[in-house]
Length: 217
Length: 231
Ligand SMILES: Nc1ncnc2c1ncn2[C@@H]1O[C@H](COP(=O)(O)OP(=O)(O)OP(=O)(O)O)[C@@H](O)[C@H]1O
Ligand SMILES: [Mg+2]
Image 1 (cartoon, rainbow over the protein chains, first blue to last red):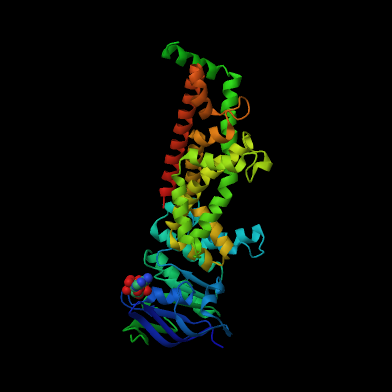
Image 2: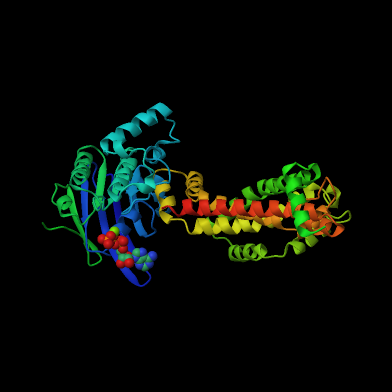
């Protein structure tokens, strides 16, 4: 059974058809790349998949369950979307990473341990005490990734995750994606980053001329 | 008594803790504090509803709140007077000429300011706040709370503004409170009604206190807006 199966997806803004996708399937453990020119609709597609944006969808089947369009956002945090420019809450780095872990019946100690591991993974140890508004663009992006990753989502939607990152951080994000591709979880990445595009992917798509097509390398 | 003599005496009264003077100041602070406590929760709640849900009459409600901000305080005092007077619909509660009545009146005055300022803070908040909260698994109530926390400085600024308005208004306090010595006489009614009876020094002392309150609240505002501006 696939993780996500979509049929008959259409997005229009007023008179303009942004895209029409007859079918899209994400298999478990699949890492998927999505490219396309500015304004092609990558961000919009990711947001639709996360339920943050309305669209016409004939069928949205997640994990074998048929989900009504209005209910898609309830899949969070099984499906997590990370913004192109992530928003960090005006609190500490740790509080941002812990946000999604709260209210799930975890103890303080368990949450702290998870957060600590994530801070380590994201290389945020040195800036863990800096107010989030003062972090650099790349550091913010890493906090946002850590904050999503700690929830172990089945489907992680990353919108240009490397846009602000340096070489090392780009590699880290690339590794995270590769790692997710090995497990049962799915990651779908929209990007313009050639380095990221060149990595190994289970599937590569391009959004152009209002349609989703396989990307020819 | 010359102005300089009166001013000197005013300073004396303030510094030496003249009990009737500080009693008046205490009435003002107490009434305003409880008025804000009464008005803030429902005003913030209403702003939240207006910012997040569209329902019939929403626009009218928004315009109404904005209009009520500018309503003269004596008009609100007048309306409340008729409601609270012995034969009025709320006369049975005996609130006219009591601190309770004043608290109610000042809360009514503060409510539209609090609601309107909170609404504008919520509307100008980054839409990614709620989206981020939701995608990380927060339910709608937690997402709402998160949004509140993100605009907390703007909400505090609304509370400071509301406080500054109610502590400095005289119309409603006079009509509902009635300037009863030791009970409902507050800073503004004392200045307005007692100065003409020769209480120059007291009037000046109370004026100094009001100006000090205005200074502190404005400094607080500047501080809060500075903080809120950090993105
Ligand atoms: N509310 C809206 N009304 C009309 N058009 C919109 C609206 N929101 C987005 N669009 C348009 O939809 C198109 C797709 O936007 P989207 O952000 O999905 O593109 P993208 O592929 O992510 O581009 P980029 O590579 O620049 O991030 C854009 O042309 C944008 O202007
Ligand atoms: Mg985009």
